[in-house]
Image (cartoon, rainbow, N blue to C red; front, side, top):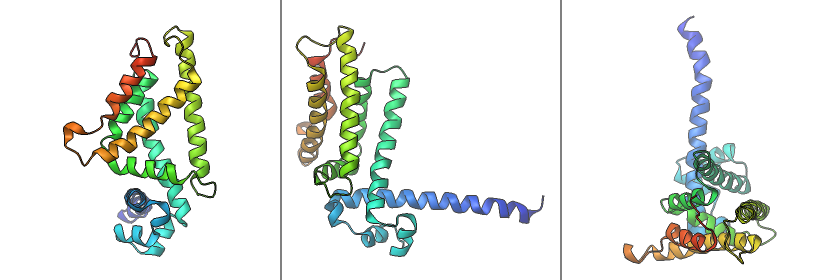
Length: 212
């Protein structure tokens, strides 16, 4: 096989890898921009400038701001779910995996900022992320309720705990802790909110032998 043939075969692969790398760079810049000024405040031209490309260059990857927002949210969930599923496959319970997810989020401030901000923004029915968050909350609550029902049936849910109410409470606690944690980051380290510790403490109130 000649050198020319090898180059012809590998060039498209290099181009594809380069395109994927640039797409990832755009997503990371968009996360920061959305975290700083929200979806409506961010502009595609600013995001393009952050990664050193032209506005038309960004549009080649994401034709609209709504498409970029969708990609950011899907990217965030793909990373979270991959780590979560790995923990479960390694034998951890759903709630132990959830605590570990919160621990990882404490190392990803921009991701937490963009999620907390967009979740609040998207309550408006005309927001581009409204359907995404509505479906995400519905699916998360359903999955959590089913797990709590399983624990109840196994005798591991404390008396008087309603699975549906507890599922909503856990989700509300996680969302609220994220906001409180973000505000606490300006304080001395010892006074900052520990999201994972607080989540563990609540789970210990409702689940018997949570780690078992």
